[in-house]
Amino acid sequence: MKIICIGRNYVDHAKELKNPVPKQPVFFMKPDSALVLKNRPFFYPEFSSDVHHELELVIRIQRLGRSIPEKFASRYYNEVALGVDFTARDLQAEMKKKGLPWEIAKGFDYSAPVSDFVPLPDPTGKGALDFYLDLNGKTVQKGTSNDMIFSFDQIVAYVSRFMTLKTGDLIFTGTPAGVGPVQINDHLECYLQGRKMMDFYVK
Ligand code: MG
Image (cartoon, rainbow, N blue to C red; front, side, top):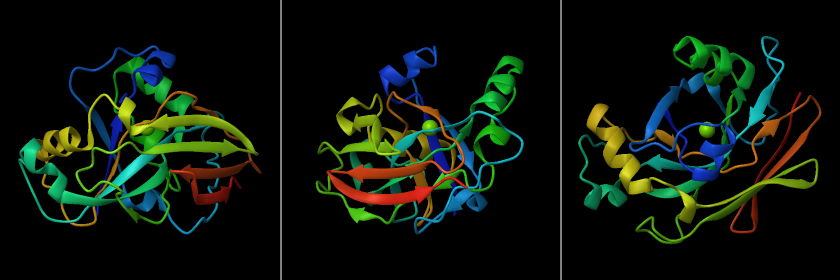
């Protein structure tokens, strides 16, 4: 199983990090060892002092495919979850400055908490999905899939040009604005369509 993550997929988030709005999807990967399920805690890594939350819609691939045409892409996923793409922003900034890959900032242990999956309300993948993150009871990130620069279908088509997608692969589809640091003992609650999907602590 692999975890593919799309970067800069919301204009307001690209701007908050002073990144250009991409003309093609930008993606990177996390290893399966990053995955955290069932509301287990996120353990703050000792090598960073600036870990940020990025709340994202996550789709799960349900059949094998490569070079998938965009018009058929919605057949390759039918469930959605919420995930947090935890990012060691200090390490990422160093790597970006040197033009080096981001793995140490993005792929570390516990960096990918994911909720249970639910069926997509609109199987074409085009219906709006609204989601938000409460940090210690206060809403800090709020997004809707309507604001994605690249749709689920465009992402699946693009990624599958380069690598085969397999059943069970996860795709984090990018974060809206409002990313920020977390601290030990913080409480994160993630909501999709008004329903609580994930609830966990930073330890
Ligand atoms: Mg992200």
